Length: 481
Ligand code: GLN
View (spheres, helix red, strand yellow):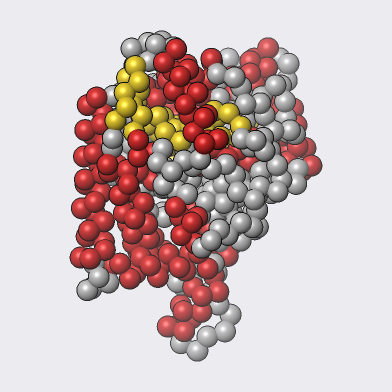
């Protein structure tokens, strides 16, 4: 059976196990695993935190998250534990502060097993740009996990962590969740503090949970959300969501936008048609509509994300922290060599693209135009949400690629983000959950998109679906209840 937060918390409370014994089980499983889900193991800290969690539980204190072993993407800062974004340029960097989201989980008695593998600086869709090599998909080790939060998705699907936090700039929580058959929530922009999240595209980045059930991601979202004085873009959200999952979808208007299904293969289409049918049987009202803005999102995303990345990554110059080239003959030469040797090819490509679209002479033609597109995409979604409450879409038009797959050209990989990037551009919340398997037995993911700060409705719909749909099953290995 899948180890969910709820089942593990029940075991802890019934005295079936302690956090210390559960943590040891996860440590053994991680040590025995070959899927490269972890790039840094924090076992000493985990053992200490587990001991403290057991004390909290014995004193009748704590929450459902107390004593539960979990993991964090390697771009979320952890005091005293190496945080590298899976880049050579940050190897050896040990933050002296915690990200707010991690600080909040820590206060509840979470147990950190380690940091998860990812694409370098969160740029990619397969986690293969990691300087530590790619993680493997626990459903089939010849396939990618997706990216960029691939290690977290592999850890959760492979039961090497009860849950994980990832980050989503253009799909990096939802796409790997879809490829690994788990649930992933990209919260509304501003719902979770970005303090301590190493920036990629600051106007798009959001931290969010990945778990083995809808309830699990709802529980973790409740624990990490809220306004934070250290992130000016964070906002207070209304109420909790984990206690609002019941209620079903009777009368809920589920929008199906034709743009999301354009060019989709027959096998994938079948899965979404079946999901739509199930929602209809559960009493939802299916609304067919068009959201023209969706088609504009991909080019806008790759301009805005690269522009912001080129600015955010300017700080890695070898002067203050991280990698520094060994041989150089001037300051300029040192910075140039440090960045050339420290950054991987994909990161360099995006920095150059971003610098180009921000340069005088091209700014108006590219960056300014992309910002205008962004406004019209946001308006397009607002219009759609006048006639529906939730949008249903594929998370990705395909299932997990074979490892090493390069496609016809680089653009093909960028194009596979077509269904995930629109919500980042518009700042909306979206959850990805499993909705079947393809002929090769690889999981397919469905996305439910909501209005700003309306995580409660998309999670309620996801919960109703999860309770009634045929389960997709699970990958082998790891810790089971
Ligand atoms: N695949 C997208 C990209 O490469 C998404 C990345 C992300 O969400 N961090 O930019």
